[in-house]
Image (cartoon, rainbow, N blue to C red; front, side, top):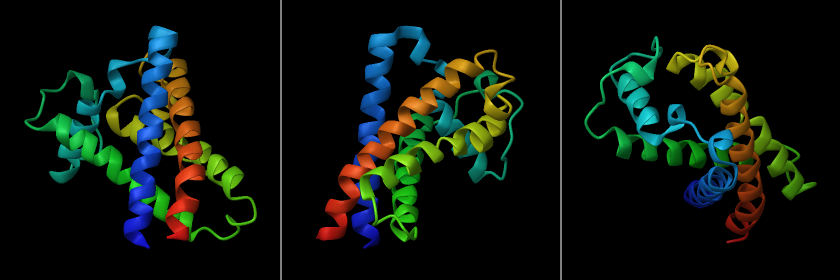
Length: 159
């Protein structure tokens, strides 16, 4: 079941990434920020591996070798883990698609309240100077992640 959940989470993350790229293509800067690039996530993950959770302002720090690949791997691993958590959630079977979309929206709280402060952006990105944009991007991405989970998780469970 874990392998199936991981696959569903990875595919839901692909849906998320496609929605975010599409939103940036259509909405321009309103839906794009260098502060959320995969290499920034990789830089943060590299810091975690060295025992560092918080950064003053991660975009101003020196790049780390392999940070892009590490950022992508971290992003997709997170999607896989979140899919597994959804599978373990009680009550998700009553309305599987709606539950998955609601769960996807709820997962937007993780970057807004955990990741952003760790990157030095503050809760909800308030120290970044572009909080509304960062939160908008997260909401678009996590709604799409929920839609992806709603589509892929039932297929993974059936197998």
